[in-house]
Image (cartoon, rainbow over all chains, first blue to last red; front, top):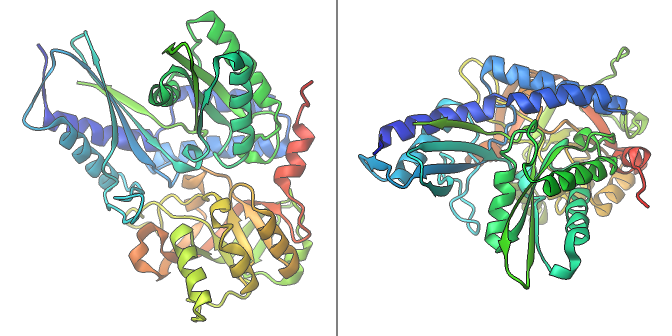
Amino acid sequence: MKIIKVSDITNLVEKLCIDACCVISDDINNKFKSCLETEKSPLGKNVLSTLIENAKIARDECSPMCQDTGVTVVFVKMGQNVKIEGGFIEDAINQGVRQGYEKGYLRKSVVRSPIDRVNTGDNTPAVIHYEIVPEDIFHITVSPKGFGSENKSALKMLTPSEGVEGIKRFVINTVSVAGGNPCPPIIVGVGIGGTMEKAALMSKKALLRPLNTKNPDPVLANLEAELLDEINKLGIGPAGFGGTTTALGVHIMTYATHIAGLPVSVNIGCHATRHAEGEL
Amino acid sequence: MSNKKILQAPFSDETIRSLRAGDMVYISGTIYTARDAAHKRLYEMIQRGEQMPFDFTGQVVYYAGPAPAKPGKPIGSVGPTTGGRMDAYSPTLIAEGLKVMIGKGTRSAEVIEAMKTHTGVYFAAIGGAAALMAKCVLSAEVIAFDDLGTEAIRKLQVKELPVVVAVDSAGNDVYKLAISSYQVKSL
């Protein structure tokens, strides 16, 4: 049985908050470079090279790539036999966020209530998702989510008769309406099936899949390729200034659903789609 | 990328009129940050007939809420936020003289109409290129609404802040023009 100390959780979360905000993941940075070759718009090329330069400055100086260091979304994957010692796991995670945002000079963007909108001053509370697994592991992913892109995400309960065509229409329409606002080139996370909240969570988790990986389900892999192609025909381009690179990838996750339903959620990730992961 | 076009802020109407949607330009001089909460306050102050915290004439407003400054640095990462969220307040502020704006994303028809009437311009900075843009800031000082934290109004001295003319004073919109030229119509 694995025993995890809460102080270790706090320290790991602190580090992951800073890493996620300051260090772009290799798959995304490499994709910028390959898109720079294929992008047709001169202004679009200029934007892509600016993003590459920005990522380099952020990494070299350990400063956040984007000033919107987001709501801190934390995914915890832990074995059913793991024991947490020394306190409550949720307090430990929030303490890690507090320390990471302070030490990393990250912006505190969280308000305590959506109604009175008073800033909590330390970016807590995090939005935490737990997943219990059979393996003896403790794995954390921190994915700060800015609201330029989050605000352009959408969910719709389609009817089964709308089928794959309905799914495609909804995804493309959501990206089209979002336009230049979510900081394209974007990553499009799509959750299909389950219930309303299951679809939403899948669409967010789908953003975490590395760009250079293929969906293991060939039907979904095809659908991803088709959607990516259609989205890049929209002409939105880098920063929305027009061009052929509107999305870097489309990632789909699905789950069993009800005979009467077809929930579809689209979570849009900006060009940085920040995340960092670690294990204890 | 030769012949870098550098504009000095604050702007004259003549400069504003010379700009065309899609132009890549660089802004040097004094600009002011203000985003959602500051806009709401400025708007309410105008409604009450109160004096503005700075003279709007020709001044540039940058929709941004910076990350905290590290020791020895004037400011933290500072990229643009979505301009559309200021749409409810902008026509009123434009009429008061604050008509040079930097943000990202599309603006409403009402804002564009106000820009045409009052000779305004809306620039877009590259969303997310915030570490790079912080390097263009020479100094920063909070001049109003200190209690708003990152959303306070800051007076910045900038050098060659890279922006694109998104909507010009004739109402031409890069988001519509450029996108349509790269759009591949589906069957």
